[in-house]
Image (cartoon, rainbow, N blue to C red):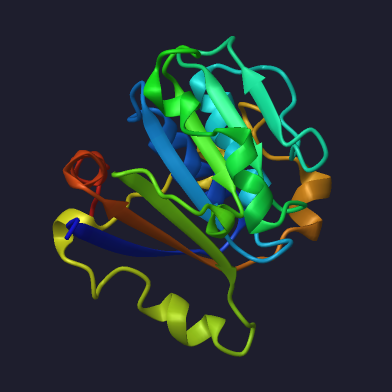
Length: 204
């Protein structure tokens, strides 16, 4: 059975969500597989936009709902952004997505798959990212104890608004529409991704 490690992070604004994605992008290496889950509007594409920018991708990243797969090669690693929302589970196999992490037909990079629950066959190891909007009635209680229940080495130091806004990372129109508080679950499946999470810069 594959070993797993889970970290829960409460992000109380758009910048916090972007900061988590930015830090993650700085740690990934060629061959990384990220499986994203969350309801519509939970922030999956927003997360990938910040992730891609941190990789050095200047092209605007949009959800490939109709194209299914978008490839970005301008950053320090290729980013293969995949969206399975419109497909039935039986249709996914025809995409042969495993070719993107085998490194034979495509250069190894980062594979990010939205609506990954539709995959019939999961890769041996991967990082699962679940995003969920937190109900306003629950947010105050949850935000009061965001990371204190997690061991010190698993506590994420999130940059402040001033750390990011000067770099143009914060889209004000998007910030107004984006849910204020969300739970971000990072679940490492396998030793490679457990080590990746251990490299996050955490503080109490």
